[in-house]
Image (tube, rainbow, N blue to C red; front, side, top):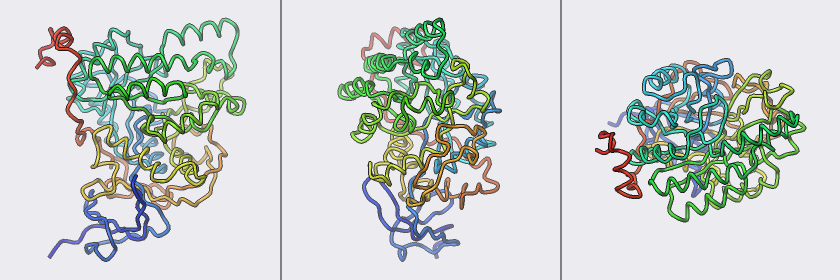
Length: 478
């Protein structure tokens, strides 16, 4: 006689990029074992009634800053992953600009231990790819990363920007490994020159930040990174696409066969220059929220596949750090991992796109791009039981005071939304249920690097390039 499964979920409407179906889900341990008609489900130890709810693959946010270690007064892995759970997010990728910067294997091991002890949801960890970390590529991969982060422009933590020469060499080193390189694609020299001129002229108002980082800094950086990726065969991902102008070089690179993907964030889709007067320093983020004329082209870029996914760049700070009078002294970023899903589902309710599109952008594409599909990002037999149970009709209001994040200050306070994550399940276990954090789920999250399977890397542009770079690195040449 077959052993009963642990849980069968009945009554929900299951969403994939292709369809929405009424079906049941059977779960054994951490894994989905069956999806189908209620009477076809195996015997279960427990059942759960999801009537009235849509069941989505848990969102995968490939861009968060949980500030742990080094800035835990802003956020840590416990509070950040609790916020993720309340936002229907079941996997997060955390950035390396902590203290110390994740730039070597030992530092990465320490961060793994921190995350494993605190996380409510699954996670991946980035490592820095910079001027001085090229030789660390093998040990960082061995220690367990989801990918590399290259800062082409200045941002919080002031991680040095590599020269183009170092970027080329770094891309050559990473390409044969198959790992993807995520890029903060803004040209640093232009921004620093502009900011210097603005400060010298006495500009300290919020819009000065936007003036210091015109869209051309992103356009140039995306085009340059794409050329280096094309030459080396490196896989790259463009973070936080903020302007319509970036879509040109992104489309061109994809058309040339470059393995390039991109993300945008709700604040670039839904906010504009008028919000600076309302939010002042709260809205300061890198890249900046741009003129509202960019909103519609970015939506179009998501819908036509130029932009592959939605992320948040969740970047928490304290209220004091966000409300200083001088914009140049305001820390950049704000929380977003908890608000992304309701913000995006509101646009589903408004008819801008379909719930199936949202599942593609929030779960399926991130899982595929990072080699986690179909273990993550799918509601299929064999997949991890990562589920977001959503009431698509629930109208409510976002309140900073209600955020799980330690950073309770954002541009979204008071915004009316439609669509509420009611429950969140990570690998077969509820971590948020009935809008409450489930006890004893701290430490349930695990690193997803162990299940990552990236496709075979493409060859470098020329054998001569590889020989030049690996002449003194036999471990890479091998």
